[in-house]
Length: 101
Image (cartoon, rainbow, N blue to C red; front, side, top):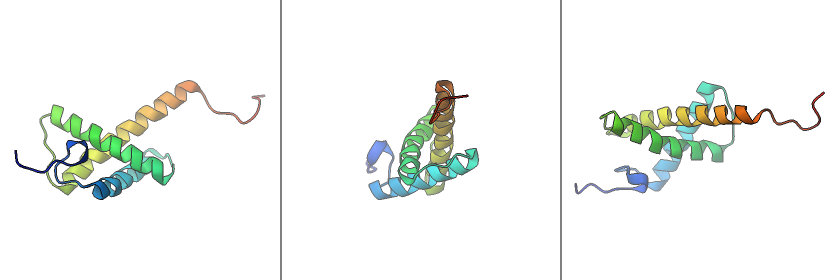
């Protein structure tokens, strides 16, 4: 109970580590799904995915300990975030620059 708690309640993950792990998880998730986007989006998707993956792991009574397990949770969460994002973007239809002929 005396463990230090960092951003988003993840123990032993500092802010810069969160950005690096988040960026890497977001980038790999984009590569797996075949969807390329910018570095800022990679970091944001990775951070949200890290939180989501940790929450899903906790609900499944699996508690990621250590960097590798936290990274895998972040990667799984990032894949879910991108899949949902892609599904929601698909509902809005394609973005056309001009009239559709």
